[in-house]
Image (cartoon, rainbow, N blue to C red; front, side, top):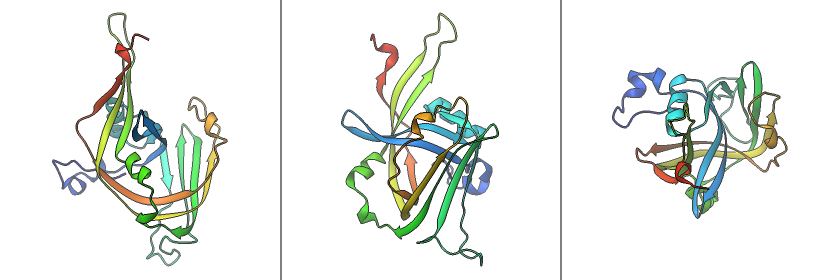
Length: 209
């Protein structure tokens, strides 16, 4: 991940250590009513400042180790990403492998192959913001939020045969996903602008039920 502040466009130069980090995500395209978006159910990051930002916003971030295949087409032993390229990513935590995923590319995709629903899912993130009660006089906070993502751009898109393997790890709750059906794997680059105003879709603290 590479992120810069809208108020400091030179941040990637001034503070490169605060603009990039590794991130492994398991998420879902979903709907709240008729509103489409994406929900990140599990996230592991390599920088503490990213994890703390997740706590404040409602992303379920944990610290972890994230590794991925990187291709340098100018390396004599490598070729540019395309049919035949194999890419893989791994997430480790507390010395255990949580999951590995990858793709063996067999074709380059074009923007015309993207379905309209895919673009709508990419325009919004759903967040679950939760702060437990730490005393009888302090109520818990539990809210479902929507975060608009503007200026979404996607490119360098390739697809192929997918690969996914889950490890044996405690306290990660990944067991229900171990038997998912693999349909297609993708490699792509994307960017967006994160809005500064979130919408409260549901406040569970005011839900009498």
